[in-house]
Image (cartoon, rainbow, N blue to C red):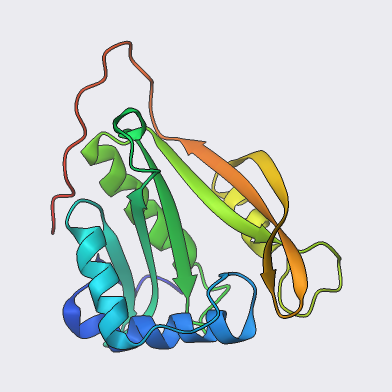
Amino acid sequence: MTEDITIRMAQSDDAESLARIYQYYVEHTAITFEYEAPNAAEMNARREKILAHYPYLVAEKDGRVLGYAYAHEFYGRAAYGWSVESSIYVDKDARKLGIGRRLYDALEAALRKMGILNINACIAVPRTDDDPYLTNGSVAFHKRLGYEMVGTFHQSGYKFGRWYDVAWMEKILGEHPEKPAPVKDFDRF
């Protein structure tokens, strides 16, 4: 199971693994709307940018990175400071082992320490039940973790010669006081 999985902060030498995991989703699924898989250098640059303020975590077993999750700024306006958008990718051969839940549990714990109150997830949604590139698995996964559906943008992404809807889901991490404390940067561990 997942007892022997280590969750830790992503490091620069994880870049090849991050690129390997993400490449599958770019090239074979509509889970991400990128058309070209970024190389390890680009993945490392993205990791560094996110880690300047937010958590970027990996799940590792026996020295192999099996998945990653991170949160980043939500729309870049001061009033959104207590909200983030999350992303998660698990190695295609390590899905359904509880790694995603472990990553998100650790991500949420880190975000709570920062003072983040809302996590938002942007999820591609198939328009038919028989789509070869996308299922409703991501929506079901987020529902199991306590996320609620907020809304759907119709035919917002085009990939593999077809249109996809985009669902937004949210999870409230804490109370929303009248005067919230400032959000702290991620404390690297």
